Amino acid sequence: MLAGYAACLTGKNFKMSVRRGLAFLVPAVLAYEVADLAGGTYSTTIPPAPGQIDLLNFIVWTVYYVILSLVAVAVLSAILAATRSGGVIGFFGAVAVPGLVAYLALSTYRGLIIPPGFDPIGQVVSLAAGTSAAAVTGTVGLVVLIRPLARRVRSS
Image (cartoon, rainbow, N blue to C red):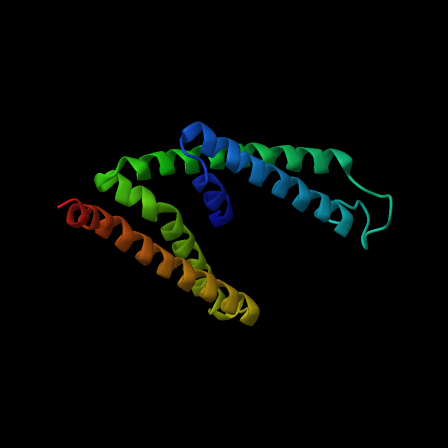
C-alpha cells in the first residue's frame, strides 16, 4: 500500500496520480501472480507437480487483484488530491495511508504475540513495519502542520 501511495505521489493531479499508480501496481500484481503460479500455488496436485495447474483459478484471482489495484489507486489518488487541498482535510489525507498501515501492522503484531497465533518472525516484521509506519505518520503530520507556518514566516 505504501509503495502504491509513493507511486501515486509522483503525479501532479488526480489523473496523473492514477496513471502512475497503475503503472506501478498492475505490473506488481501480475509479477506476484506469475510468481505464485511458478511456485505451485495454483497446482491441482499435492505436492505440486509440473504442468498440473488450475488455469481458471489463476485467471480469476489475477483479474480480481488487478481490479482491486484499480480501486486502490483511485482511492489513493483521491486521498492525495485531498492532501493537496490543505486545511483539515489535507492533514487527514496526508496521515491516512501511513496511519492505516501502522494500525494494521500493529494489530497484526498484537495477534501474533498470543499463543494460538504465536509467530516470532511475524512479530519482528509486523512490529518493525508498524513502528516505521507510525513514525512516518507522525513525521508527515508534523510536516503538514508546520509547512503553512514556514510559508508565512518566509513571506513576511
